Structure formats: C-alpha cells, structure tokens
Length: 423
Image 1 (cartoon, rainbow, N blue to C red):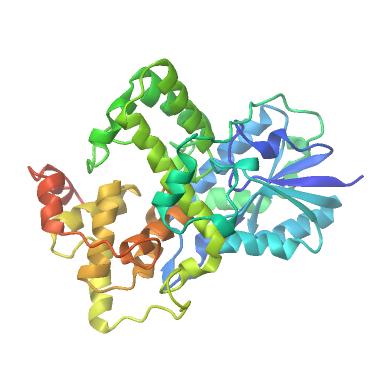
Image 2 (cartoon, rainbow, N blue to C red; image 1 turned 90 degrees about the vertical axis):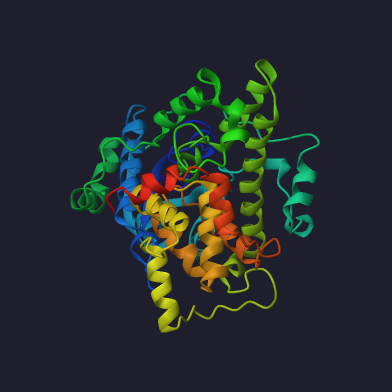
C-alpha cells in the first residue's frame, strides 16, 4: 500500500497546521534539515551560524516529542531536500507529497525537482491570506501602501484551523526511528539546547501573556522603536519565522482582543507589521530569484557576485564585528552577534549605514543577517534590505545615524550597556 509524505519543514507545530489536519490516508511526517541552508555559503558568508543551527535542531526535536504524544512518528533527515525526499519515497513506496506552499526560490526548486516522481499538494500554512483570499501575481501591487489599502477595508484573513485528534494512519515513532540516525548524529555533534525558547508551547504561552494577561499590546506603537528591554515588541518573530507559531493564530488573538477588550492605535499597528511581512511573502512569490539580484526587482537582473575592494572588505569586516567606531552602529551589531536578535529600529540603521555610509553591496548585509538572525525569514530579510537599498519596493532609505541615536537612545543607555559588555 502506498502512502503520503507530509513535509513539515516550515510548520514545526501542532496548532493551525493544515498539513497535519487536512491530509488523509496512510502517511508519514517528515522534516529535512537542508544541508545547504545551514552549512552552505553565499558571498563567502556561511548561511547559518552555530546558534541558528542549534536552535533549528532543538525545535525539530521538540516537534518530534510533541507528535509522539499523539503516537505520530517524525522522520528527521539531513541533506539536500529533494534528494532526501526522493530516496525516502522509494523506501516507503510513497506516491504523494504534502508540503507548505514555498516562498523562497530554493524551496520552489526542491518542489520542482520532485514533481516528476511525486504528486505534490501545496498548502498555504504560514500566510495571512490563504485559500480564496490569495492575491494573484498579475494584480499584486509592487508597493506596500496599495497592497495594504486593498486588504485593510474588510481585514479579511484566513482563520486558523482548529487542532483535531490524530488519526491512526500515521507511521508511529517505532516505525520512523530507524530513519533518524543522521539527524541523531547532528544532535550529538552540535549539542542542541533541550528547551528552545521559541518552541510551540512556549510561543503560545508568550502570546497569551503579551496580549491577554499583561496587555503589553496596548502600548506597542509607543514602545516598538526601543532598542532593547522587555515587552517593547511582541517578540513573536522567531516563532513565526520558524513555523512554531501560526501567524494566523497571532492575528486571530489580536482581533479577538480588539473585540472583547480594547482596540487602539497599538493593536492596529501590530497588525500593520504583520501585513508588512505578508507583503514581502507575496512579492517573493511574484519575483522569485530576482530578489537576490544586485538590483533586486528594479531594472535588469544582475546576479554577479558582490566584489569588494580591499578597503571595502575591511569596512565590511569591521561592521560585522561591531568595530566601526560609530557607537550606535556598534552597539546594535554587538547585540546581534551576542543574542541573534536586534530591534527593528536597529536593523534599519545598521543596514542604512552599511549601504549608504560604507558603500557596501546590500546583499552582503542581508547574507550576514541570514547567518545571525534567530528570527531569519527569507522574504522579510532580503525584502527589507532591498527596501533600504532602494532596489526593492521603494526609493532608497538613508538614515542619519547621529540623529537616530539622539532620538532613540537619548541618554546613551543602550550604547553604554552594549559597549561595556563583554564581546
């Protein structure tokens, strides 16, 4: 009897997961840790550092334990996604593949390579606009404001899917364990943390605290430009980017809070930020690999590698290591290097400084952020870097760093805290 493979790479959760709730028949749950995405390089920069790798390993392990409570086994593989899935399909006599609808070009490539051997069903699991609400590429605006105005009048967002009971058609933990030796070896080698901070249950609990229990959402508009501290932002970005928290679940909680407690400028602004994320997801589906061109979506594609002079290379290395000599920039970069996170205001400033003050190709900055950010999301990261560079959905955005520091770190507390800390 044939079975279906259910690829959970971008949906490391039980709640609001169409891949778990909508598939029928005999099936096997699978995650592939893509070797190129974590061990490959771009522009001479490794695509993921140890911290990002350990986080991903820990989250996959957490999902494996969560599924096991429903007697669902998880096959965990390591290597090229298309190769791993094709090989597994041969071993299990699988004829169907269910997966999340891809966003990045390398995800599309993997699915395309498998389309000649498997019947593939793509389900949109991580967008606000799923099912009949999907925009089509032909009518998708290339600027955010028209996109927002199209969507805001009715604020229609696909509802989250209620988590149901598991059926008996899944391969069990006992049946899948034999396939996981390569992944087990990675766990031993890289010593993944036992309890990743953004795994599903922790993310759902944080959402409840932030919105419902402590109601920090009511002040989001006023605090979102802070550079560090607690509860100044939603801090849901890592869990959403990694698929541990459904963006529709977050949106649903915001709208429920607005109906039952209070709606204000801050609750609206958090939804505004989620629409900004959504915009780039659909832009990536529209333009694909052009986002990795020097000119991104403006002008003719130019995929030539970034070439730096000796002086530019030195400047880039100083930027990466938080040693530019510009305190506001160095403080934000040190925060990134130490924690894997940075405020939205900080990201805009360090990006503008690298591009417009140091004259460095924006793609190098985007690649370094990809390596470091624990909330790395392909469309948001590369789209926002292109936005600052003026090669994406706007004219260039150049920030006056001294002015920004005076506004957002008026007493110098952030700079002192970061630059006096141990590198």
